[in-house]
Image 1 (cartoon, rainbow, N blue to C red):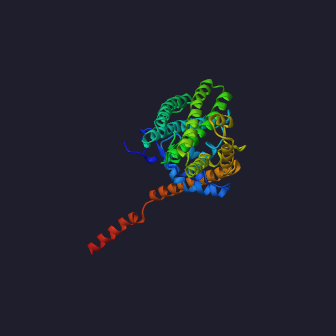
Image 2: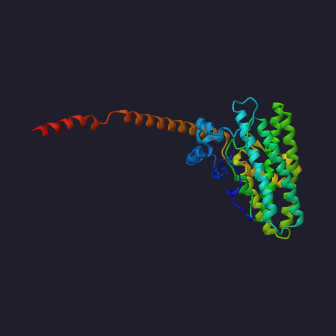
Image 3: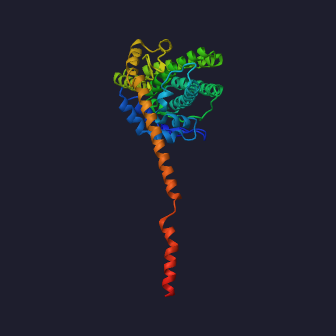
Length: 347
């Protein structure tokens, strides 16, 4: 088996639709500017439309256009919201796909670094077992809320960002970046489960969260071990972690901002071993990006443009159909021409 695979090579069965990762990368870099957000989503509109074909996200695209994620994924889970059920399924499906990629990331860490210490391999093997359980749990939770695997497109953005070719950076990306994000998302899901009184969801996610704290600790320990006596490597690893944290903040959707869809789980992160300095850095890194008002205004403009394009296409199609139904001039003139020819022959 080959070492170090590209994220596009992750194996999936026919239920899954793969989404291009470019939009997620762009979202983490957008400024707080309505025109820039609209321009980015308009540019990716054909790619977004292709990726949702045949999935449960296709009706969302038809309703909202390419900015549908701005009014679904970038909004917090609130009981009673008209879109709460769809938003819950989207998030649960995203977590399920994220657990698949976390399993693949841990498995690749075990295989990609044959010269790593035996203790590291044991930690990664333990993590693979944990992640396999998480995949099963979230598949059941997805079914519990009325969803199914493959109902929404999958982005391999998490695997792409986290799985570096250096073991220190790998555990910084997977165990501290990806698993740190899981701490934030899972704590928010637990809060939502408590609000709606879903004890099955609350207990299942709390069970998974306990494992994630252990995985973050694995990352903390092995970053120190792999970079000891090498301050330059430690510095590069820390810079990589910051880069991953910025990308995993999705333009402020995961942050300490009041309008964040996913708040940072401070207490869980402290329990997992994140230092106060790292948490301050995360607050600063994740706080950038477009504000909620900017995203909502961009979503409104994108929706209006989308429906205008649909109307123009429908009118053009109707005009073409009406034109094709009219008799052609040359067809109407044919009998006269034939008669003239016969008259000339009779002379």
